[in-house]
Length: 205
Ligand SMILES: Cc1cc2nc3c(=O)[nH]c(=O)nc-3n(C[C@H](O)[C@H](O)[C@H](O)COP(=O)(O)O)c2cc1C
Image 1 (cartoon, rainbow, N blue to C red):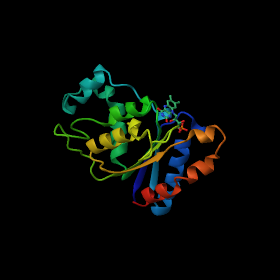
Image 2 (image 1 turned 45 degrees about the vertical axis):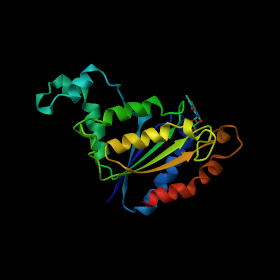
Image 3 (image 1 turned 90 degrees about the vertical axis):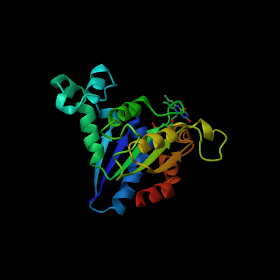
Image 4 (image 1 turned 180 degrees about the vertical axis):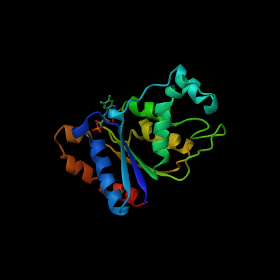
């Protein structure tokens, strides 16, 4: 039975448009994959240290030479990579921050992108058996053909970094104009409804 890993990023919890869209995706995925299991990796509730000197020491020292300190320094990374490896599909639901991704998501990426473990020195990805869906919500609209399309570095970066670790089958759902919900111009349901078809297609694959 397939496993879906859902990575939640927004600190806005109940008010979050990306969490709502990710929730919709999960429901659709469950219908498409009866009996499948879902792991929620909520980055807001995860201890995510930044890369520091002991981490680098641990990541670049062969495991058989690890001191207890080095092993401890990359335990979070080891655990998050094990979780990622256990999944057949991944969905990342994230807000756009400053045209890019929130720092907390970058901190997660820094933990799971590890040379020799998830990619090789020759940029060969080692997690090749997975598919991902990336949902990016934003205040402005960055859909293809829109005026500010090129300002969006969030989805391109996520596609690139997932590709580095071998996940090249990636659907991107750009959910712009999310502030219409905060401004009361649209209900959350109306906003989410606009992307129902794209989410359904992504969940089918
Ligand atoms: C710190 C911060 C930076 C943001 N930067 C951008 C941005 O560069 N472009 C944009 O269109 N929206 C930006 N926004 C708006 C969010 O992307 C938008 O409100 C999004 O829907 C929030 O997702 P959430 O509802 O899941 O929290 C920013 C919001 C915050 C809080």
